[in-house]
Each structure stands twice: as C-alpha cells, then as structure tokens.
Image (cartoon, rainbow, N blue to C red):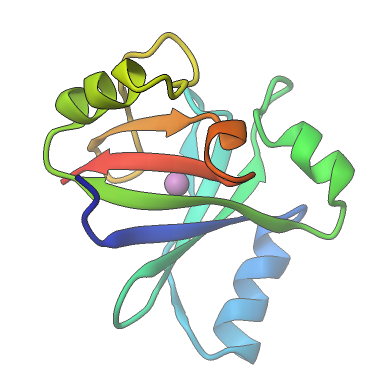
Length: 134
Ligand code: CO
C-alpha cells in the first residue's frame, strides 16, 4: 500500500529563520512560503534529490502544530508523508484494521494540490503519518 516517502515534516517556530538555515547553512534549494489556512500552517519545501523536507510554521490561532511547538519550542520532527496510489482505498483498509484517521476521515487537499489524510500517531509508534495520493 505504501509508496515512496513524499516528505518528512519538521515543525519550526520561525519559518524565515529555518528557511535561511536550510538555504544558507545546509546549501539546499528551498521553495517560496505557501500559506495553507485549511491546515493551519505555512510551509516551505526543501528540495532534495530523493525526497523533500517540509518546514511548517503555525498559521492562525487554532494551528494543529501549536501544541507540538509548545512541547518542542526549538522545533522538531512532526510527521512523515508516504505516497499511496488510492487514498480512499488506503483509508478504508486502515479503518477496517482499527487505525484511526484524524479529522472527519475525508481527505483534504494538501500542499501539492493532492488529497491527504493523517493517521493517529498512537496507532503507529508515536509517529504522525500523512498519506498523499499521487
Ligand atoms: Co506534510
């Protein structure tokens, strides 16, 4: 069911500082910031030869990463995104086996314009998993 790693996401308290660090210190190509109000985050993507790193900063008052940053004020690894071919088939298989899908269970459109879902970290060894249909 799982395809390649689409991206690894890191929550950061200051997106401009994190962008500068990846671009200037690590020498990476970093995209322009993209506000995703429906997800409560602003993101940039660090482009790598084999995958991407997504840097996330809270957007708005009810950001889903605000509590994470309170616990991890310097930032930290937030989720890993795996590609799937059919997100609804993946969701149905997961929920049938008892895994919990966050939110209302319906895919939202993610940063790449593709449908995404998040799976409860307690069901997957403390790691928040994002699935993206490619
Ligand atoms: Co993501």
